[in-house]
Length: 436
Ligand code: DOR
Ligand code: ZN
Image (cartoon, rainbow, N blue to C red):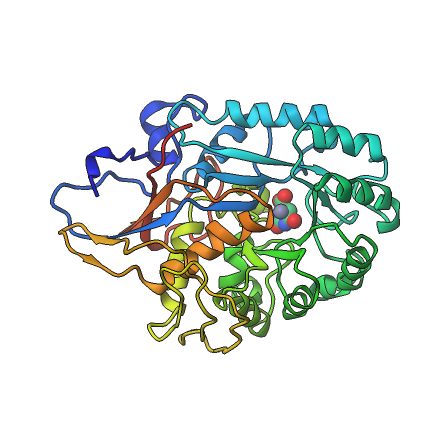
């Protein structure tokens, strides 16, 4: 690869330090420092990923949060739980304009995929105008279930006219699938019957159950038709309840749905490591300032945008074992057995697999080439392929570089404590693709 032809983007934090305010600053990137001449390190190439669930907020912080996402992702599905919510065609267009304005001149190409917050007032005409405005998804928040959902849906029947219209317009239904009145650890399981009702009643509606946290939800999604899929976050893949309350209270590990048991996490890992196309990446990166997390009534949400890809790289490298049989060069591949190290294993191939049809793509700074490893194939399927396929979007044409160069996660990004603050991560992520 001709390194000189690369466009290397700076980290948001570095860019802000060096250039000032985020609205005029360079792109946010996960990998802080430029390559040092003469350094030797491994480099992997990955098709530029998508994040099918992010919170970009509004106002002053929007630009910085957007740049952090754009540092690693070419597209992201933007959640509508702002105040006021994104709920009309005009509101959606305004929000998209604000996001675009926040990208800054040095940000790599980034396409926000817009969603709106479902309400009973969304009749056929309202949904038609949202479709015309380019809505990708409508989000169902049961009332009171999470941040800014007090005005959420009281009964799913009340939004049936909207779902009918969404089905006609090909708008995806995204669901925060928790029943707010159930015991907190049982809320996701308690919601599943409602998911099944919706899926049965609207036979052409595409549905995404967001941020899965339980084994029950994995099983339910598997059992439903292929038009039903799910996002999985990096924090639900890595944490259990012990990481939140098992020792001292860790407010920066608090989110909704709350992280669950080791058995639940094992099932999420299995779905991802099996390469099942129904399960794809949505970070649910949800920034709240330190003050709003470290207080009496702390907000739910982990800020994972700056660390998600490095963490996923470590996760896939660790768990996709060398014995993993993954298709290469065919675009199809076969099912594979999950490698060890995580306390579980699986032989559920499901006929899936991670073959991408791309050639060898691992390089070393000192020269030389080796075969593209299985874990890169597996990661690419999860972050760059399955979600795009479900949303019927073309795959991104650009790439990111994963460089094995340890870095320490800053204590704060724009007043927000990120997931893994202060910890050393092994991979830096740099977008190579063209600015749009
Ligand atoms: O932890 C969460 N934070 N879960 C959600 O569903 C919403 C999000 C937020 O907006 O803060
Ligand atoms: Zn969310």
